Length: 280
Image (cartoon, rainbow, N blue to C red; front, side):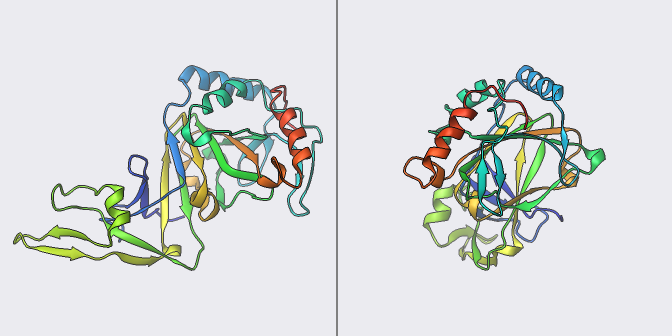
């Protein structure tokens, strides 16, 4: 739970070395994150949280409380059934419709919604983890409400990450992502005005942690590498006031068209998208 040593930049898609870390001045492409700010208005946020607070928040792990809208699942035995699932809540219908405007969410059909309540006085946090991929599909979608926070990404892989220098001769600014991914070295100048080449630097993946700053009312989507290669966490130090997170998940290929459990998947989606649900 130390300081993350890189910060994700939504404008460039790069993870940039933090100023006071040993990786200052270095960056690498960090694919699989889509972040959009002000996804809902202050009024919509207030209305949603008020509706959630009418229902019971059940104790969860690590100081969190939760409300689940989804099928009954035993992940260890890989079994599930509709159980008492009656669908996503009515207030989510508008959110799900708005998601269709996001390029990365084409065809996204949520089959489960989980509301999580974080508060500093309970020491709320969530340890580094992968979301299940037997049942849940490619894209994880979270709406961050009531306060800013930081999603911390870490990697247990034995491989290395290739870092690139982030300054260019012309501007002294961050190089565009194309120049980082297409070239193996960047030129810079020293004080005498002569050029020298900074070669890429290899570091073990385990030494790298990336902070994704989530503004209040932003929507974040994790997919690809950010979903399957990097674990995500939220540490206690990054919960400064109440935070409510609304996470939507889609079905994996196994439960989708042509999959082994296609019929069960259809049944669950029909229930989910009736938007008549109460927490299970």
